[in-house]
Length: 169
Length: 332
Length: 117
Image (cartoon, rainbow over all chains, first blue to last red; front, side, top):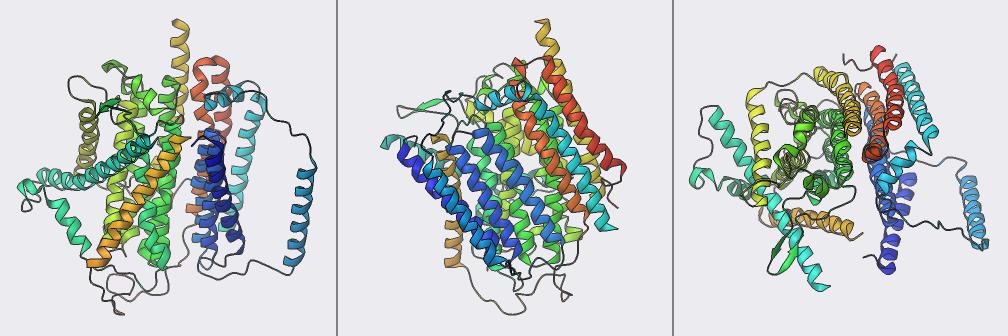
């Protein structure tokens, strides 16, 4: 399983899952199905993290995005009474413009990637226990960002409560 | 290479079969224990002491018509039982059920896959168990099911935080996320983490019961209000799968509690697997005992208890444990 | 990596067994649907409206708060693993982190968001 060939195959399968389900998220007409495919898409990303030996990140991805954020979205869909089974067209008049600019961006990005001759790779070997390494780095080198995260989270929470309560009144 | 694949596959199949058998017999255990607690006999006709009852039930359900209501969303309706069953099963992938042993001349590990992030994996998989209920509730097209599904998912996410936090206390002592490592650290009786983390143990147990939607937290399916909650519209094998999944979750929580707090398969004299099963079914007995004893919570009590009591308590326990670890370290 | 492969095989095997029992059951069970049987169960009454009544938005607020604290809990895991090698300052950092977040919970508490009536 660790040989490059099978990792490559796994990567292609996972990428296909991520891309196809991502496409379905923005094109399906039933918004509940969109939310479910979003969950599948995010799970696929977690799989890619595992292929990159980023186990902690994969678990965090499943826990936070699949287990919490997607559930939040599904809740939102379920609680809005007339949304759940309605057929909704996801495109508007600007669809064509958006499509063209997306294609332009992808082409530009690919061209840039192809044009880059020298890729900088990390020189350090992968630590055996990356969860512990992450813990240490969070507490030492990235101490300030770590504390700022908590402020950000509280701000998000208070904002969300204010908005949700306003809706209710 | 071929040998490794064959052994691995056989092990996977063996674990799946054992887990399913345990689920089936947990239903019998529940009926028997509940019956004796209520001065009844429980199932007695199918085999001695009703031992064939789970098999009889399974065969009966197989012969039942599978009703798909007209209002339901067919595909989702059919998928939901499987989506609900898989996370329950997946927990067992990282639970060490025995020490390493050798069989037919091969060295076999006592765990299906010893992940570096085992504990976190369990926490992540548990968070997926919401989906089965949400899908079932949503796709049935019935008010009871939808309300049951939403209730249970809100309950699950409320108790999941304390569930995760109670594990953190153990990790502070163990300094690892690998389940096998954690079991190895509890080699002697007084090393079991229950003695160092009694509060976390109680929190874990409480949240585990809430996560599995059991009494006294079985609001999602309280029959007097919601018929049967999220699986009101299900019948035949699909209903059976939900049933098995529920017992699978109970077994999963029991075996995780066994591993984290009671030393897993460690124990004197008897073989490790036997010790593991004894501890797990001890927890199962406790579950059933609770069901026979307690009335059901009210929904607002349930949510308030989760957020205002358990969650602050779990946070305080984590910080207190960290301080304790720090102090004892500096003394040594 | 092979550890994760066996988890995958485990999941596939489990799903296969369930699907297999579904298949066996499909072969032997009766199939006789009629309109009355397909009606949504509502204690023998005809269901009024569809099931999309509007729910209490509190469910949504709880999910929101859950997302925030889920992120907090995930930060606690690597901290706990590395704690043995870090010492006092790690504890202080985490206490500050948690206190800031706890302020959020306190706010929600005082605003009556956690109350269910």
